[in-house]
Image 1: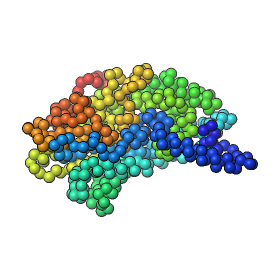
Image 2 (image 1 turned 90 degrees about the vertical axis):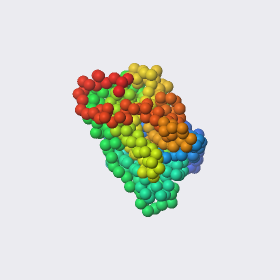
Image 3 (image 1 turned 180 degrees about the vertical axis):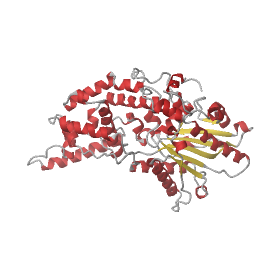
Image 4 (image 1 turned 135 degrees about the horizontal axis):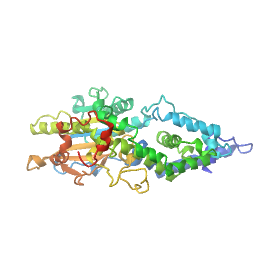
Amino acid sequence: MLRNLWLRLSGAAPAPGPGRAGSRGSLLILWVSIRLCAASLGRPPWAEYYGTKSRYEVLSGVSAPGTDWLAPANCTVLQVNALIRHGTRYPTRKNVPHMVEIHQLIREQGDLGSSLVQALAGWHMWYNERMDGNLHPLGISEMFKLAKRLSARFPALFAVQSYREKRLKFLTSSKHRCVNSTKSFIQGLESYLNLSDQEGGQWEVNDGLMRFFDHCEKFKNLVENNNTALHQVEIFKNGPEMERIMSNMAKKLGISSSAINTNMVEATFYLCTYEFILKGVISPWCDLLDKEDVEVLEYLGDLKQYWKRSYGYKINGLSSYKLFQDLFQYMDQTIEESERNQSISHTAVLRFGHAETLLPVLTLMGYFKDDHPLLANNFKQQKHRKFKSGRISPFAANLILVLYRFNGARGLGEKYRLQLFLNERPLPFPHSGNLIADYEEVKECYQQLIESLKFSNVCEFATREDLIALDHDEF
């Protein structure tokens, strides 16, 4: 019924005959009511399975400042360090051709006696390669609002004077979606501060930090340019779970299953995903899949992220060591200035990057590590896995480190404290499970990673044979 309703309203189905002129208006009212009802329930179909293409507000449940953000008792906030993924974007250039391919296949070979095929064939392909990952207006809004929320939560740090004195530092990847996310964040901050002069709104492009994966020779040689590094992903693509999806899609479309490949299946999932996250539309592309299908496709995406950006290979996490050290260097500087009763040079350091920036850092810190690795043959066993890339790094994801001075400290060791937030929710420290930790305790936990000399050669050239020697359990 809903599919036929969509057909009539979209114009993909024949227009109503004489004597039924009023039916279309009635159907439109019904359709709008259904959409409003679905929106009010806050449960769009499968939105929790969209992986790194997930909408931030759907998964994070962001709200007004609450007790989670209150400073610990007897503490003064000194600095915020943030690692922020760019906001919601359009599809990248590499995704669009496969979208066009599956759409063209349906138009040429699909069974036009099927209402679903009619809907898909009549659907307008509006995605094109020129979009190439550009920031979407929703992404602009996400950054604008995030800036306002952080400013409201830490007004002493995001103050007019700090902004004008350039004590708020902005670093970004050179990619346009990251630069534009930075601009949008600054605009949100200026709006909150009632400023329009943009005196402090300057940013620095630093791909060495924000796109470290492009500058780590060992990562590029062992993983990025290694055809066998994603072996588990390729096995899963050719496994029974994906075969079932292709077979079911072929039946729904009335075409041969041999005409459909895994790239088309992924493109179908992307079309379902992007139509919802960019337009808020539950499109007919979603009708080609069922809940079990999207769980499989979510796992396929997680497999890619796991083996290319996370625990699959040790170099994935280690490649981010310079960015990880940069976080602590700014906090060390702040503590030194506090001890000397000097003005804090940077009350906030805000870095704008990618999912590929955030995931390795969290891996290096030991977060979201499952007892067993994600493999092609353990999809069912990993149903309740910790490593779900969409919950970790949706669009506009953020890791925030808040440094405090404890005013009742008896010694330097407990004078400074650290609190972490992931996507604006408290993140327990992996070594203790506590929500707040002494800064020196955290530094000791990550001592090997913070010492620059010990890891100065971590990204130097390595042979592919070294991939075998990468031990997950040793530094």
